[in-house]
Image (tube, rainbow over all chains, first blue to last red):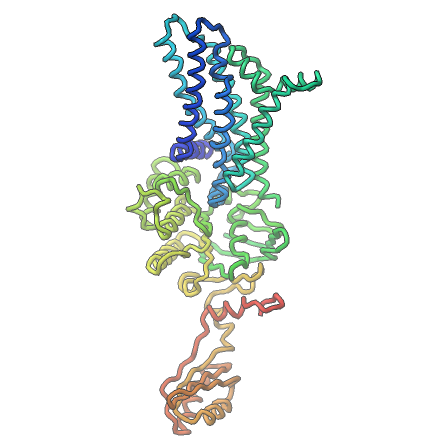
Length: 248
Length: 315
């Protein structure tokens, strides 16, 4: 446990020492700024009801940010250690492979949350400048954050897995981007597929409709279980990839 | 301390380590020698628990390196060949991070980090960023890191590579000091260094142990091939004939320059030959300005053990 905390702290600190993390944070906040601008322009047209938070958590900009930011944040995790050889000193320290994988995941997830923190200001900005007495309903907002963090957790675990497969950060980023896109666009089958069966199955995996639900404040346990178990699966696969050096 | 039995490691298409067995007792400094690609690094990686062996077994302090890997890792300090460090961290940050990772906590951690910094001459660079340090300093950071948890066994893969002669001397002194409290297994190419630091050498070639003994014993074993060098003023042909006739001589090579003949005499017992040679020269009335035994260095032994012939067997 102590080893995990030590590693987690170093992973989180590594983000704050990395220029890529700052660039991606700025990119993320600019894109989310567009989302916020859309939210404000919808609200400017009068009371918008409970679905207004989808402008923030279900917009085109939100998805651009999620699909691009996560692969870039996670590409370094194992690929860089492998390239520079530090994986050797890491894996010969008295720590288990599982602790290393979990610490890297938790570090990336921690930074992902840090990236989201400035967006809490949106609620205060709305409150300060809106003529309405209660411009934001906190329920849908909390639901939106929950959904973003759940999906983020799954995408980060995909990124971590992709990073463990290679010693090249670019390859890792593209691999995780491809897997995340498959999961994301696969969800669209629920709107396009001809077969009724495929449509209803795809609905369970549709990130887009899950986020729309969350941003209405409708917290369904099924997507929660889906995201957590998908994360667990990817982390398990990553541990196996790291262990695989011992199979050869 | 280290017990390696019939250790074998196969990679796809090649055998890196082929039935290596050796033992290292507590408190020994053992040099691990071999040409590039002989399997030194692979053996060390297996001992450090980074790679598993294909066959055979290895244990450190009684713990199997594969099954009790974590217990083994607690007891060793391993410095990989290319000294992997996190370039974005400061020296102090890195040493504290590694100390914490290796289970050194609290007040003890600060004490240990200060100690190893002192030992490795890092006192002034604690605040520097590792990526901006010179190769020599990085090497020392790596060494300090491997020492930080006060391990029973140090496994150092080429600890002096890339250092200048002064730094090499410092590291050598440091390793000698360490041997009072730690067991050390180090690999290196620099043979004089091994002669100076190591009590025992294991020479490995093409994945096999070809020699394992003290440097002195290895030299004695090869003494049969020792040479006597003499510079004699006399006709080259006569000198050659006279020297070849001496008892115990197996070969004579004479080169002539400015009236002096330089004779290299191969023999079985150089100590017995030298007085005989002097008598022979004196009786012939020639001049003699040099007479010495050329001792085989560890380098000669290393070359003769690991010189690769075209059939792929050690010559």
